[in-house]
Length: 257
Image 1 (cartoon, rainbow, N blue to C red):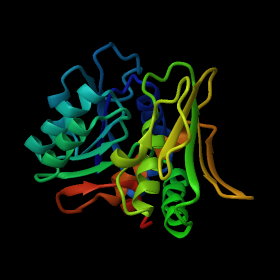
Image 2 (cartoon, rainbow, N blue to C red):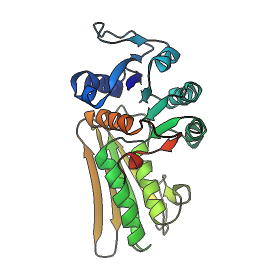
Image 3 (tube, rainbow, N blue to C red):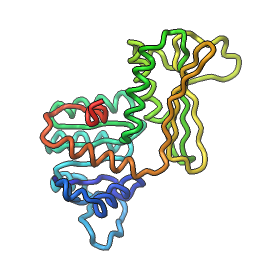
């Protein structure tokens, strides 16, 4: 299975390339087809690079995308056009962006997750279970922190945690989310899911779901210390996707959670 990496000069794109070149993925049937980048890539002729994403799609069986929302929209359309599997780890996607993925997934296989780590996806399952089992009197708050260069907030992972909590309460995050607290906000509204965000330093990513009860508190936390876990998760998703029918899948599908 030939893997193409769009945005191969990006932070996670480089890690995916390094993982494919130095790991044992070839024994699992994965090989690097090449990468695309708008900028020149100094790779010592180790692998094929191009500034044409269409050429990369033609040369690959699976495309891995950790870019920006506008890029991902185009990649989804290319994946549908060329019938190539697409693994998406881009964060900051809007509902409109996700609709583009859903439409493309009618024609090809797409795995989309705001976070590709095994631990985070287990956290999502635990949060949904906790929200379902704890009565509505328990207040849910989500706190996340990332490095100072992250441009979207709350993070895609924080929103995924919020969606898991809302699903546990048979509701949607759109109905329950509270993103804005400033000044005289009044008493906390029952059932809302609050979000708090911190940006600074070189934090890879930390997320905590708080369940506040009367006389007790439950905290479910995940801390990422190395971005390699995102590369490994994306490649695991690529392996899993082999010969899967067209459709939009998540890492919870990949991990059978």
